Image 1: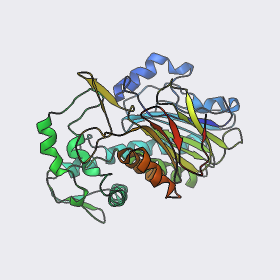
Image 2: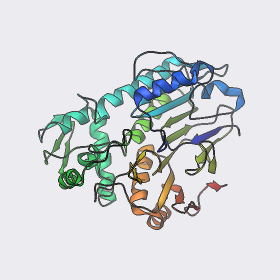
Image 3: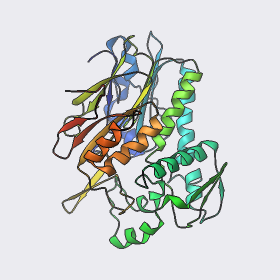
Image 4: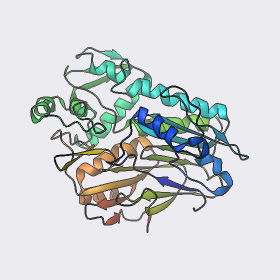
Length: 369
């Protein structure tokens, strides 16, 4: 493998959606003490950076710890319904802080964890809820993206997304979707300092389209403030690479082929201090009565988006922005998505359309293989 290489994965495929308990079983089944589960690779001189070692413990705790001679520490967790893998040239104590921060965010941003900020908002029936500063900021950012996209990105999709279960394969009835759809509309969300109100008592928030990006940016901030210069972070389909690779070279991020094996790469890009986010229709889906239902929902219909894209990989300095816009690109479709990226110098992107063809935005650093 090329030195400084990180694979930008798309998360779980249709056939292997994993729950938190399933992740723990997966760790045990692979015998992680001998190598384990890794979403990011690097050069041979820092082999520990991509390895994991079982530590046991309760769900939601850290399950990996390794330090090489170059002081590359590594953690792998299951939070935010995905695998989080972090490798950094820093102390174990600093990486412990980062791991604890992940659990903190799950306790605030999760739609399903009782007592979280989002759970409290969704169950307040229109009453004002006091939230953490991070929650208020993330919601405010999400409303900005909703406004910029004309509602294509909408965190009030929770009224509909709560009806679907793409891990267990649950499809709601047409009647349930029709009843929930009128409560999707970001205009009902009011943020005043650390207070959030839904003017529609039946509306529900779902930060799934922005949370991992926001959290990734926050973890990078913690690492930098702790004196860490070089690191790679992978939160499902969100990757951020800091500084130089653990071999002293520039990071090289590879984009996974949505139609190939897990380690098949369709494009690469040199990167440093930047985020790359991949979204794909195959990330989480299930098949029922011969029809595949994909996890990216259209706020206009309440059903999986109908698009001519299979995957979109976007490069941006902000992981928060990249996360939100990866969803927007799907809802726009290939041609409009390319036009958007070409017109915005914050972004570079690679797309795979429904015919399997790989295209890229103009003037970018991606190399299509």
